[in-house]
Length: 147
Image (cartoon, rainbow, N blue to C red):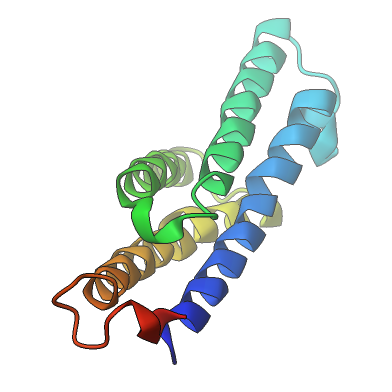
């Protein structure tokens, strides 16, 4: 697989993955827990907190989306965002142990946070090294190989 082709695939996968926080976060901000089929939250502070966290989730989706155009050089931002997501997944482990298993949608989120995102972080890092080696003056294939 050429570097240029792998770049396009990685960009597409990351863009698709961004849809989760953008769609779920956006719906959760607009509709609160009602998006999940729950009645309005009382006390109101819990609804406010739910929407606040959902806003952060939405913003993380936007921030990941900004990595897509230059995925090969977005490593530090990509790793920071990935670390935030993994920390959220670890917080779900605390809930799982303390309260029990969540609904299917949250189990999907758990899989994204502790499965897909770490794998994407590894892929992006490996790809960035490969990209750099083919786009440096000492790269054996040189820049033309990536086109």
